[in-house]
Amino acid sequence: MAEVKVPFYGHVKQYLSIKKEIDANIEKVLMSGSYVQGPMLKQFEAELAKYAGAKYAIGVGNGTDALWLSFMAMGIGEGDEVITNANTFFATAEAIWIAGATAVLVDCDENTRCIDPKAIRKAVTKRTKAIVPVHLYGQCAPMDEIRKIADEFGLLVIEDNAQGIDGAGKNFKQGELSDVVCTSFIIQKNLGCFGDGGALWTNHQYVNDTVRKLRNHGSAARDHHSFGFNSRLDDLQAGVLSAKLKHITAWTDRRIEIAAKYDKGLKGLKFITIPCHRPGYRHVYHLYEIETVNAADRDVLLKYLNDNGIDAKTHYSIPIHKQEGFPWGKSARIAGSLANAEKNAASCISLPMFPELTDAEVQYVIDVLKAWKK
Ligand SMILES: *Cc1c(COP(=O)(O)O)cnc(C)c1O
Figure (tube, helix red, strand yellow):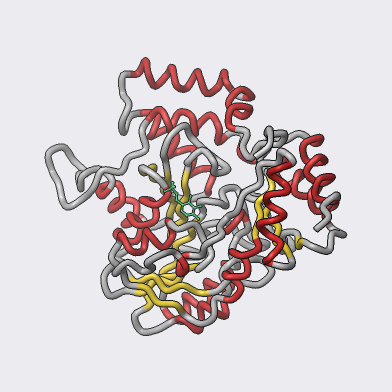
């Protein structure tokens, strides 16, 4: 790649923009002498629950753990089928396998790239226990339609919100139409800490109580244990996240502003499609994902962007069922055609998208794309 003119992430820029607040929280934790399951974690969990409008928020080691710990707390495991996107980050399916359940992969909508409710309905069997819709690229899945299917068949719904924090649907908030919302705080996510981290929120007391035990060696009281794991969000990360949570809405607003600039600048181009934004939804643009109209153009266009100093990437060029060796002896089922997921994988390009991007950088990306000649 040529010298980077427009980077893909702004992690250091973001840190510098609120350095005082982050440093103050880090110092507070260091001086407290309490670094794991201490007061800062408690504070952040309370802030996150309030922000999410949920009764309970629980910090865990990472986003993948948030998913499978919820599955386990709800009794989802061997013999159960869990329906999710074929087009998602690998960890969504991985979490289903870690819990011992069968991953049932279904197609996405051809425009929004969110899970397709029609495909979910067709995939339901007697063994189906849960649906895990992914708020892919930052746009909420159609939770209202998914809730209807879940009610009809008596299914649990767990939102994979690793990419969608601060988002909402037209008539629903995250968590309003599901049992649990899971998220990741790895730095490239919209709310990121300086290491690994994750959380889930829920209104179910039993999920709260069980995950709190599972994440800490099955222990709710000193010296008492049931089967569990070690998956805790440490207090330094909680301090970073507590400082950042106050800014998430403003950062999302800036992402939306940048997306609108991209939309306007790229609209007329015949060789790409721009992201489909569901009317009335708060799409948080974790990624600004364009697709080449011809899949054959994708690698050429990606290289052209990179050669011009634009750090564009792909998310995700290989869908789960096309990974080498799939399903590695794990239990998986492909339900129906995955043509839309495969088209998405073959033609996707993520343009730089983070709140600290300057207008000039955004314009440069637009100008470079406009100047492309095959
Ligand atoms: C990042 C991500 C995860 C996993 O989060 P980790 O913190 O890396 O474990 C799960 N699902 C989706 C959709 C993600 O983007």
